[in-house]
Image (cartoon, rainbow over all chains, first blue to last red; front, top):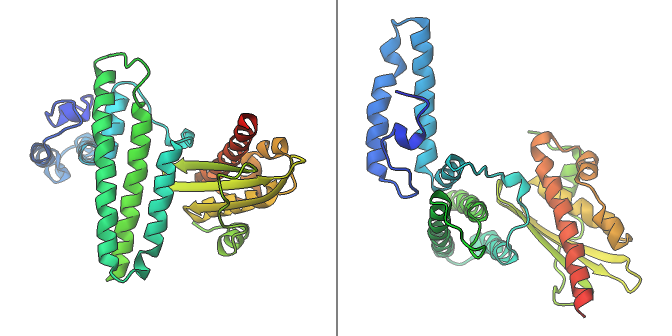
Length: 182
Length: 128
């Protein structure tokens, strides 16, 4: 296993936002068998250390490619674009207003007559918001990867990823609330 | 991670929570968000004819430090001119609340929110 390969190469996948999840998991499992530290129990210290490092690298890789937001950030990194969320607070006011409204809805879910129905409505809205961003991201990413000038009229890939991250955090909070309901 | 007493105080008794009518000419609204933690903050100021901030309100969805940072800023901006308010630095907020390094971005968010509110007010004034 070559640690200089990027995560897509590592799992023999094309470098793209759309990935074949079962291929990823198959490749992960077969590589995991090869590098598992148990095989090197009687090996040299160097071999043991390497197998631990490789196993960690594999886990890092599968975690990065499995999650849409992490995968998007990683794709941009491979293109030399570093996403720094800390510096990016000036998001679209429309987007932030939607987020505020969704947070307000989340806050009153437990007071609804049917909180589970309210949760489902939130999930649906979050999923469709995220789907829109993913489609936008793919277009923006293709432009970067193929070096096509957008003429300045397309949304920046980094801004789309920031919104994706935002929506993912909201989804996690909805999940947390759902767990407290039953 | 333990919150400082000042953060806890603002978190448990947030000052100036609420909303103003953002359509009013004397109200400036700042909306900011932190993608890393999903925090969203709305900070509003009401400005008198003399250019002094008369009142401030906030609504923040986020961690204790983000709520405390915005609560503190609403207290600080009252009685200040727009320029004085826009000069508030996140370092002063972080210091006052004794925020740990991992929560510094919450104070940055509050600084950005007040700047956004001041800019929104100024933009409204110049278009009238």
